[in-house]
Length: 366
Ligand code: SF4
Image (cartoon, rainbow, N blue to C red; front, top):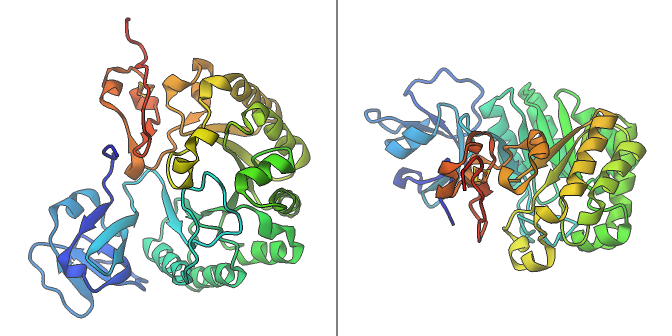
């Protein structure tokens, strides 16, 4: 594993007995209100008291900002989960899921993790950001009472942080649930990211490893779209569906409502994708025409198409403008050859988990 742009895991002896979210503060007497979680003050001089833990760690001082949220594992390890320095912030709210995608980056575990939803709500309230926070799983909409309780806590603290919720969309096949969800979320901007991997139920169901999933997801997309919930469609090209990327985009743009944008995402070599890599991964040069067609369709319908997780030297130059620096900085890396590339500033680089990285530094005289 190569080095990430922003380290996010640290160790602090002083936090050995704390489990759950903590808020990092840089001054002893912070002027922050509404703090329902323990405080960690990074300071050389003050002393730990009943209301906060004080510790000094130059690395946390360097990489964390006043007000960031970290998750403590009860053994002294902390991971910064909401960071003002980060290019994107996402919270995991469950490890349970009703799909079993062959490329799942966070394979489901049958454990009681209901507490994660409560931790997420506390973290969002304490972080109190106006920037979008991602909510992911597992499947965040699997346990309906947890999601409604989550919104209730945010409402009680008058929190308005905009949210992007990544869901397989199956829960929205139930119109009553969809209506209640929209009502519960109404105090903030919410966008749902829903993956659609094929125009055919056979291929989608194979990729998510669950018979009947496509029917549920498509019904969910229709219900949520018709009720006005903003939807980002997500597509991951694989050996099974790369020939139909533009057909999936066309289906989304012509058959569904409330599609705000479509993101086409290069596969991440982590979780179950690692063991299934040879069966799934297809190099982008095999489907550059499909990407071109998909982007043209987006232009014609006036819907934003984005390419996530593609190094620029794996694309045609005509596609650069659709490419986003989408990899979270704590798992983003560039091999040393990229230092010779004129496009490095614009490029999204690689996941730290990527094996056998291939780069072709741009602008070099060969
Ligand atoms: S050489 Fe590196 S910086 Fe340049 S486009 Fe490729 S991955 Fe990006």
